[in-house]
Image (cartoon, rainbow, N blue to C red; front, side):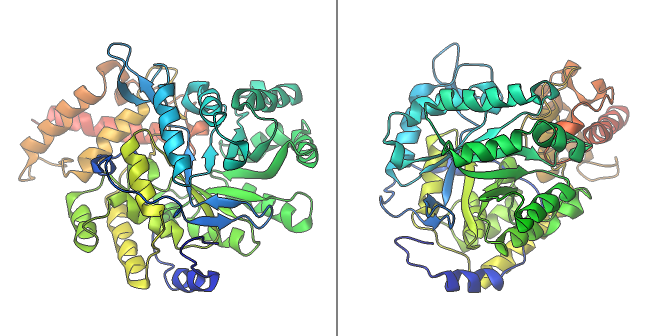
Length: 472
């Protein structure tokens, strides 16, 4: 449901239904592209596109604030040095407060966090920032992130929920998710251990009945059998899902399964939710930034069509074209990220049929690059043997998109590409944390939301590195 735009559901369905072509894998919200927005840009207030939750009639901002990449303070100069998702430095609470204030002022009202985000610091920081505002002005989404078997007990899971209330400084959660459903190599076993055998799912339903949870849902990662099982329970009336969080973008729409056989295309996930009237919350709209860090030729194609819009805006407009998307989460570390996203959503200009076809072609180009589908979410970290897995994949993918992945010495730019790869590799990843240190213990595999066979990919990269070293 839109506010100031007054776009009818029929118009949305018409646009979405004629444009069901799009998808593949690569992106992140802290892009250089989005950081070009000037702080002086005039972003209108009162123009945020809203969607209505049919269960509670909440008017939810189409742009959701993902509190998983909060800015941190440099130990040396007290300036923002990056994201708390990757750093042990303290969160820059002053900047978080400023950005949350600005977001709320411009209509953002959905804030998504987790006990696991920012090395366990996100809920506390989010609570500080939001508690300064009228509770009726925002919706808090958090998760029961009981991945570790040590937290599977009924007592530990209950304590995690209670601690979320404490850290967020609230007496109820607007949107509570079972976190990472479908993850792990034995997803059904893990799901039962986390939520069924301990009776914690029934306990959460009781908390909803008491008003301590307003909407109960789950975030889906991986095993489609779990997704289908939970929707079957919904159909049978065993459990009612008020919303479901899925990974959706114009690449994963058609190509998620092609990229990794164990994944599921977003088209299926979205369609199953839409036909049941279950609102979809979208994660990874930019695939960890890979739908922004793209080859120049793709960026040029987008800029020719929309010179004034960022590359990131295409991804959000794709999502906004689907009427059952309630909100899309963006992890915004910098004010420039927030400003750019607000420009896109205040109000949302949905895509027409021809633009949807254009994105389908872009998705095809991205898939053909054969990058590692890593979103740099850090769930695989820390590696017990010290590898910097996300940085290894990031460098490898960067070399692919920049055309620096020489295969043989017969390639015309082999020496240049070889040098760029090896020197860049040593600069990006210290030698003791590179792919050759992997022991294939597979501890990381069960934690990967993308279901990547991480050891196999690391071995492939190491073979490439060794090939480059031997063939100067």
